[in-house]
Length: 231
Image (cartoon, rainbow, N blue to C red; front, side, top):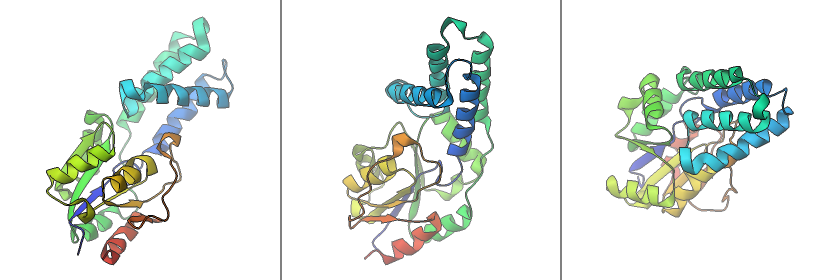
């Protein structure tokens, strides 16, 4: 079997995540309704969040700061202080929401563990990601936990070296074409794209559908069989 290391994303690969951000988005546009149409508020927030990624990184805390910044931009001096307080409350809900595993994740992890070492590779705020992992009850299933600021080709190259595995004996699976698939392929690994219904625009990219080490899966449960088929 050519695969020794199986790397898995966390948010929206093992447990639900974007549904909670969508709820925060809806709350944000409702609060800003007196100052901007919902589409304008959403687009302004998206632009602010993308602009702030290099400063705040990924995660709920940076998103909350971007909501407040956008609200001040759109509301100006007429923005009530209560809106800022409500946005902070929405951010706290993002940080405290229950962790809901995707369907049959534990069974899928059991099958994958029979095929190679499992490593969790996720990006975002360290404290929040650690808290979600602890709440998930999945931590003991992984040989390694890698919480990174971003996922790039260099990230995966360092990871494969750390675990002593050749890139072509590693696979990465996740719901982000930009962060999970393309950099892993660039580093020489195999990569599986498992799309979810709610996708953040920042994580989209053109799929390399003709790449020999790439596969699009309908569900993570298909990953063990694909690994078995790799020769």
